[in-house]
Image 1 (cartoon, rainbow, N blue to C red):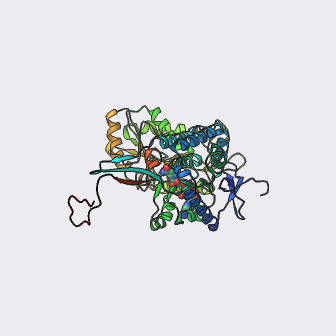
Image 2 (tube, protein in one colour; image 1 turned 135 degrees about the vertical axis):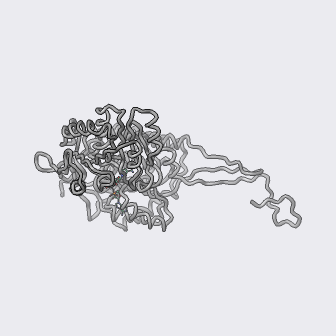
Length: 497
Ligand code: NAD
């Protein structure tokens, strides 16, 4: 492994030394090692949390003027924008996602820093209508050392959503990116340092989730855990966090319905389905993985969809023309194949795709974009695949579409596509999901709260909600007229509460 570069943890303003055990990060499109990273031990995690707590307690960051925080985070955004091409190349290599997706997605990532920098600058406290000669101010103070655990599918975007909010609010951050695609996040340390962030305020730690991630989440001195990942990971973390009284934001999985109504032109309906379903080879939490199609649109939609999916260009993610890249790992290929097998055993009909594939040299973790006609209660229509295998379900009516849309344990994203104004609002109002798009899908903005209901999660990323979730409210009660006469011998107009 001597010729493979190593990227260590970023701790206290420098790259730490390499750990004896390392993890190899693969390029999933060619199955070649890209780099090795640290597999951080429990002992080192404990040291990192201790030093981070010391930084929180002793450094000026938590009390830094909002205007300074604004400047530093804005400068980090500017530096990131100037270097975005390097990050695009790295992100494409480590995720196997097409370069055109990564370029488009990453071009907006600096906006998250700018948004939270701005929120820090303009956020105001409150004064309550407290009775009597008393002024009660409510101010928001940072939480402490916060642990951010992020997934492999949008490595930089998801890390930056959390890092932006957490730093803007004055916390010390420990970020642990996914061991499958950690390299872009590990590169952020020097960038924030150059922007003027004090050393030790952003720590970046790598390792396996079941080890390093768990050690971080179990540490009693952390003040918040912000996880984006699967429900199994949430369930592993939640009990101990509850014991430690550590709040969790959890951005978990989804099974987003794409509700397609007959007022649409069929071409638009098919474009909507392709966009919703196959960005990132279906590896997004809001992948439109259930196409719920009204019967009056169904036949023409199915025929055109099949034609368009068969024509999608799958292959080398670095090729500008590639539309479908790799999935992250052999395990992801096998999970997709298992969903196909189960769906067919359950009476599903394969319209197109259904197979694992490789590049021309027989390498890479690829899975063909797949559409299976199935019923609403099938495993494929109810469980998250996190791959390019999409359930197509025919529905008899608007009521049935709403009922099916709401009939899974997930409730993260959903889209409603119709040219009927009243129907759009009626259906959107009835769908239970944290994010409902009308005539859109995947649309996202730093100002727009993002998060699911039911088993899709707790709390929000983005928006004022995310910023405030990185703070706690402190109430200061300033008395200028209530005398402390309670235990005097002769008391008149004594006030207790
Ligand atoms: P994952 O849960 O396997 O891993 C996510 C992170 O958790 C990684 O950094 C991993 O190392 C860490 N981890 C794993 N086990 C852990 C443990 N016991 N303790 C602490 N940390 C642990 O998820 P993934 O495969 O990387 O990502 C896919 C999942 O993420 C999907 O379910 C997807 O829907 C979800 N996701 C949700 C959103 C959202 O916004 N709701 C966005 C993207 C992805």
